[in-house]
Length: 330
Image (cartoon, rainbow, N blue to C red):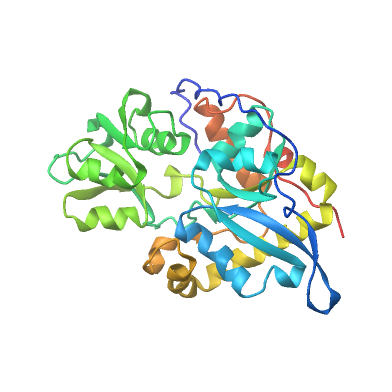
């Protein structure tokens, strides 16, 4: 992987001060309950993304008894805001939670005591993947990334993955006029001419292309990404995992089984989406992307951490082995 080191953006704004009460919120969280036949199960509250493609494998695994077989009773709670995942696991509102890779490692960079326990999806590994692309307005005449001046995203802060793709194509991400728009409307901003370009993932990519007002400048795959690196991750607090090593190990096995099944049965996942309440229609299989297979590989995390450091998103010197939880041998 070649990192475009000739450009380094200013460091992202520091995480705001968060007052964390490290006591359990509610008596039902993480408790052991009696199941039929006298078998003891541990109740866990797990935060999941509102993104149907990312979270549906968890709902499917709960329905199919994957976690129950491991002695776990899961209550899935949808995160209303991506910023709450870290505070909730530290406050014991959830035992484990999904989080974007960026917010999780930035929290670790600030010294918050969490670790990664797995991943839901990964940056596509196929060099021909059309899961994500940089798109431009169809009438703009732009056919080279160097012609792009304005960029639509859900924040004006530096996104290391987007910066890496733009710079690897020969553009200058740091020089772009970045315009913040609500996440679902990023494609509309390009279609309406309010921004020259944006990076879109499925299903938003297909929706934007379907308007006829947007076209692909470049699919983002291969050398424009970090193939196989984690996208959405699962996190837990170091304190909870130290106090409950066996529960943690079983939960990690459960999410691995959930996403291995999802990758092998993507049509089943797509058809189950309406049952989750996350979306009322089944998405095309292509919109699901690529799911994590097996344990989270610290080496894949290292590659993405390098990109984050290159663009000033993190400062401390830690590696994947430092932030990926290693369960105790059973």
